[in-house]
Image (cartoon, rainbow, N blue to C red):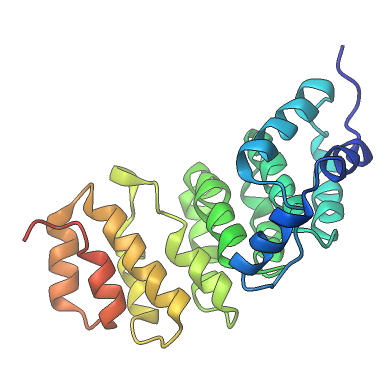
Length: 225
């Protein structure tokens, strides 16, 4: 029988599997923005499965405080674990949780966590109620924080036929002249992904809008010559 959720048990589980040598290389890969325990994704996935098989998922009332506690830990693997917890409990998430996701996006910010939160969590919530969530995503697109901007650009990444092309186009147009590498890259990624669903729309958009060279190159990367 599963026990109630125990964050300390997860922390111990991760600490017992630290690898200082891998931690050094993983931190270097992330430009030394965060310290690491040295737990690569396959092992981290196994450890999370062990934790989830032994303990119940947190109740919705506890979930945010547990996620915040993990996000307050210095090592990056705990931030990944927090996002995994939210993914496991995403059926409990509602449009009212978007401001909380924005807090996470703007905390310990780098592409690895933002790119997990935006399409998998924010995107999931947006599809629940597009009318309610649209104004919030417009706010994200106009935010000063570049990671919130990136999240707005990428939130429809996996929507395929459900993509709101008017919103996609307007958010991209808002940042089309950005000099930020991570914004240019996200624009290209969003367009390249949607091209798998509607290449004609993407080709038309790219041909009728001025994009930074990196964005355009990424958007057309897999198009037939």
